[in-house]
Length: 281
Ligand code: NDP
Image 1 (cartoon, helix red, strand yellow):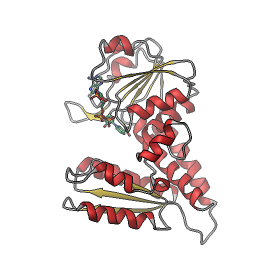
Image 2 (tube, rainbow, N blue to C red):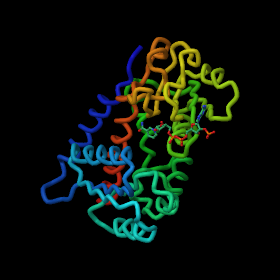
Image 3 (spheres, helix red, strand yellow):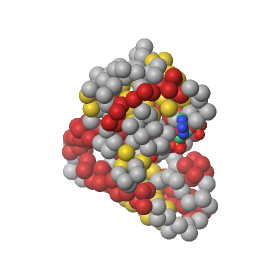
Image 4 (cartoon, rainbow, N blue to C red):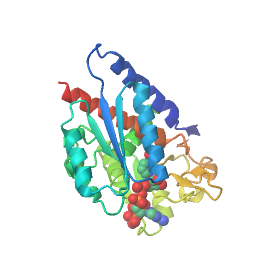
């Protein structure tokens, strides 16, 4: 069994990004990412801090806008509008979920598609669907990069994605399809889930249920990618896959933490660099 090491892979990709940034001549601006967070959800603040750290590591300008829970839709829309026109900013990210009184969709749609580095807007989702895109959504793109780094080619393989959210499951299925896998998407209404998952050469799990996928649900020799981020009964970070039992059957497996998580932020940095290059053309 081989560990799909997201930390190491991510570090290598970040080194490449930094090497590109180091080539920017003196006096020319660096790529810039603006992250907006509304309210005080502790998990969201951790994600935002890690994004900021990632930016600093590769030499990007990073701006954080921490707004109070009471922020109105008009105030948030006006900040996004201002950043759409800000020539120092290449990427705008609004940390989700937003407080209930704010409309996620409306806010995401207000980000200029050229700065939508999360690739959540309808424009970018549409482009991804037809395979003609500038940005890929960060988590599924991170999974593809991890597979590629370890020489795992999905072409002709049977891939099962468990979970169908708009930010992970659905785009993951699309990317695997574009990589020529035969893709099945499973979800909470899927019958005989274990039978479905046992058919997978590549199994990607993104459901948000601690240690849900057990060894009896996995084919011998499968590649297992665990997107989940949960807390176990002792408050320890864990994935959707029961790592200890599944690792005995898998040929490759991602750990949690240290698997998909670090890749997600790295893909965000890649998208910001892509946006910068397009803006500076
Ligand atoms: P959502 O809650 O939006 O979606 C969960 C999906 O899982 C739904 O499609 C749901 O099905 C399906 N599901 C839930 N229970 C079951 C079940 N018992 N059997 C089969 N399918 C089930 O979650 P996200 O996609 O946003 O996130 C999934 C996990 O990934 C979470 O743990 C999250 O924290 C993590 N995550 C990690 C990231 C990273 O960087 N590593 C980034 C983003 C997310 P249905 O549609 O039928 O309700």
